[in-house]
Image (cartoon, rainbow, N blue to C red):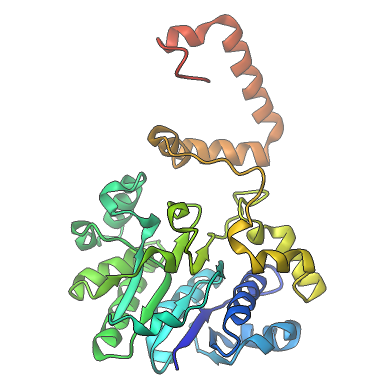
Length: 336
């Protein structure tokens, strides 16, 4: 029987346990007999067993792994992720915690590949609107082999068979990830894709429905999505995907159950979008959204609203002077 694997490092200072609970709940709703395994450390295991007992019935087994205390909480989760193959016997499907299972996953056992995943943002690297940022990060950690491939995989959902090659891949991935950490980068996808190239491009493409990244190119695959990957982030308030919103997760933490108003979205996860959601496809708009300027302005609005308000007033004043028309020749296509 295939195992469905989650990685969790958490405490009472975050809502990662609640994210995993929603994913587990959705998986068990569709596959009651699914074998679910949680990889964690001793502190998180104790936390689950003492403070989050309501999650335990949805977990088949918990495996505690020794992790050096020199790592941060985030780094510990990446440590576990890049060493999964060491600690899990048999074939498995790894699933990130910030996901919702939208369909039965039993068909995964028919996949012939040793390791398989979905492209990051569902497009080749050459067509990714933020390709420059990816290239810069690869260059910063001196891992550029992956840049010669157009297949840049997302690590949120991965199918892994138990083979010698898959063990070798994970050992390479973990070694490269540790090198990234030494160079100041804790994310795991840079090392994942570098390891893939060094291991002969062992990762093969899954159908996009297995990892529908709804905020990053996944909408064409939402109708048939098997796993919805909503990308947990604190940048959005409210989050475009309702099940990712901190208020929803906090209510679960307090009530220690999945509230009725949330269960209906588990039953129909493809409808769980905020009414305030707005779609963008324009390349220039996307470039701006991915820019440091936009990130800084967003932080300013959240953390220093008075200063941001003054900037808005200045912008309004510039409009009143007609300076905009001097800056942009075609004022019908631009709006400050």
